[in-house]
Image 1 (cartoon, rainbow over the protein chains, first blue to last red):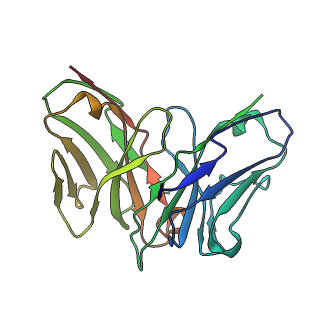
Image 2 (image 1 turned 45 degrees about the horizontal axis):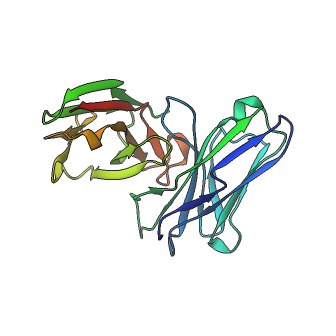
Length: 115
Length: 118
């Protein structure tokens, strides 16, 4: 499978615990995006990387959230001290363009449930 | 900031009929408008896109039109089939540094749940 992959697909955690998600983009895609999607809504942008540099963060990304993309390949999104409001689908997308606009291809997502 | 409105929120059609979904955007700097199809439990799948220098684009049974003056774009699906049933999202990409940071991050509408009845 040459698409975007995400792990785990589902995560149930108790409030206050830390969780980490992983995204593997399409090979050679240099841009990687994280979005969050709640029930009945469209995806909302969280942050994106060009290679290993994190170039933009949304106001939605509180200080409990941190994302990394070491070596410009896979990325991780960590949520510390989870809250019930963090329950959502976390989507990763990747793209490869030499200039804007960028076609983004999404992974299957990680569904987080905070109890 | 940028806002994308999508209508209708639900759409039910008979197999073989056409379906039209409409979106409007607020930021005139937007220059890229993709459409995604999302099936239950899956991530969004890019089905077609249009750039601001083009007024219409077709791909088999799917077409998208863009009216930059009115700031709206539409998805047209002809000869609908039951497998077209899904949630469809429109999106806009902010091209020039206003809301959200500008480097291609997408602003999505709230989605249209399309049901195609056999």
